[in-house]
Image (cartoon, rainbow, N blue to C red; front, side, top):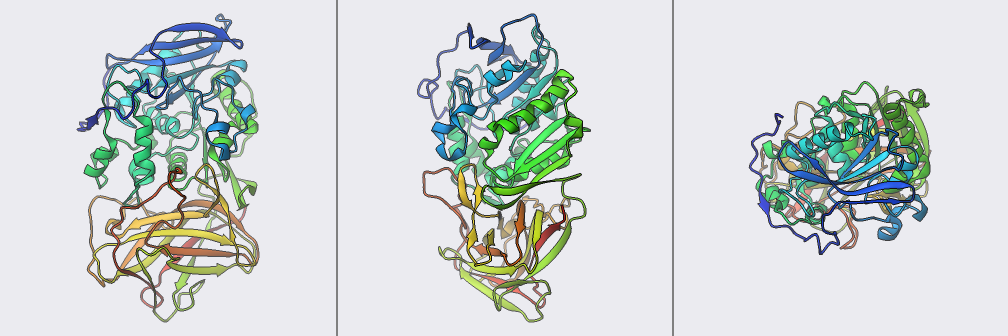
Length: 553
């Protein structure tokens, strides 16, 4: 079978963990019946490359009934049950929502088998007790996944309609394999996963992530074979090139029916990529749901799981569910952490969005609807821990802001040739108190939205729109000390209700605006180019502004 792999010189290294150290049992086929399920461990599935991948298969005991397979493709170990209520107590996942067979971020076999499905969990090639090297998010991995889907579709116990499910990496690879359009793939449920590894994980706005990205490579790195040396590759590829293109989904090629679930609450990880996925896939049948809660909680929450089953029952079993009566887009418009209202619309971005400019006024640190006539400057020390430059806009009437924001800034560095800009958007209540939001899977005190930019990466791609600047990341364009340049900062999407008298606060500084104590898992950017004093220019010929998306739902 022909492959589509580009000629990329991937780097490899010895594994960061051994399977034994991480608790993996030796490979060996085992067939048992437990809790009403026929369970097969370490089933070998052949690939076009000559090596096998290993799967655990959970299916109904009655083998005479053909059922649809649901695949979870994981780097985290198919052998390793992951009770999120114990591992991440703040995740919001209740113990009763997961059976003891549920592995990290994957569908629960006991639930799905009891509803007439088979669940197949697969160790990605090269991980754990492996038979090849490990790639990550790469074309060869997608092609091996394609072969697993096709194998699953022709087994005697399979009805030939294969679905994909799972969170994060398990969604990243849903995008990658779906672009290959395997014939037996009938439906996918991408649930919060990036689609562009460079822009959404490794280099936010061109600024390297120095905590989550290195951490996750260790988490993926259990094997008895060589694994891809992602951190070395990241250092060797600071710009978007063929290497990073090989780790980005070609979303427009995807045609399979899709139920896409994203959130406003995973900035710096999954929010952007999930929404880009929905926007760009070519599927004739696709639905979008965006919430503001915790991603694992939302995936395993019983009502969410029933919606998943409604979707899969329709496309994998051919049942007449109410799926075709679903609105195309469901959006939660948040008021604060854990409080919001679900709204429906026909498209994403929301049709008839009214984009409004709020101009920065450095003279009084406000955001105003008319560009100030007089020029002014807001300055801050680029490496200070203080608030940086803050600007506020108070809403005289209630407003719903749902969609993409863009920050156009005129900036200069007093004594350096580059700048890293960190941007946060917050909501303030009528008394001026910061309103907290769910953020990064487990936190409940996060910002409304975030954005980043390394100024030397400011060159815009032709794919940019009025509301979403897309950076090429192809080259470095340094500035002269004291030179003022215009830059556009992409602020990741959000959906928020502002009551009359509440306010929006924009904060710009030279370090991460929000962080949490180490070693808690979070995106951090400690390798900045910043030195000296930064200046933000407003008004006159340097009319910096924040573009906001006002909607009526």
